[in-house]
Image (cartoon, rainbow, N blue to C red; front, top):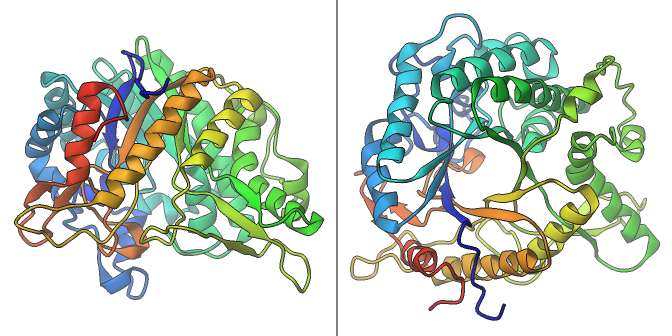
Length: 445
């Protein structure tokens, strides 16, 4: 359809994450998270930034809901802070934490915004990390307990649930690369963490279904197309390896194919932590797959030993040095649908960081972000038209926020946040997105 008009039931949303916006890191009984510990450790986060205050959403959620209402946003994807519910990771429940999210949900529903709740967006209780974290199997039971408590409390009103956000990042960036909490650098820990994350997902899905009538349950993966820099055999092998590392190592077990043999061999891991029945539990049917898409990778084999060590990008870049490549999302959607067959797909994150923190006559103009969102929505529409069941799109992010190890140096928000005054100001991208929602079309000026 040339006018890129979306189906009437298409879900138009925006997304955030608890540690990135809430602040109130030690208020009202909340326990310490691995990101509290990590960001408070000197040298881990740019400029020594922390999420202690962030966007102060914990105190300003009513204003943020009104902001979304004014923009015409129909759905809000937020994450729940596990240590706000269970300060020690399991055991005693912090009722004040449940009440915060209960009020947030009620506030959303009162203005007609559908809540989409993510149970885990990286802020593991530090008490569980002290026992081994995701690398230890004990965390699986703790997560299921947390999922049970939270969905029993909120499931009468929240029907859309995402178990995990980007388990690849939790496992490999947190336990192998050390760039994210808990900051470890151990491949074997990362592989074990991947398995325990997936097992936590698999075991919690039936619990959520039991607690939530008419539940819509899924998981969100960060999927990145891996394209060879040339048609040489070495480059194609390198791209296939990175594809296995980031994409197939999670897609395959979720769909009953087990872990890719080439990756298990490459990791040189015994996978001894996999127990009988685990893979069947991981492959529990879901209602949807959430896809977070930002860019593609071009992969070139290292000239010395042909190892896939060089991943680079070209063309227009965001501030994260990620190439702007909308066509990659179209290709990815086609691949995931036709190769894996999930019943539905949501784009649970898509957005870009650009240097737009200086107003002009009181306005924050971000034409690069407008173009980014517009062009990605167009290819989502094209994918729908070839039969890919994309049911919704959540722009990342509602607010300029704490961008993990980059601190506050990267701004993804369609709404500007003055970190000193906490004043919110809708950027041009927010206003464009509002018009797109009203028109149900990406083909607007």
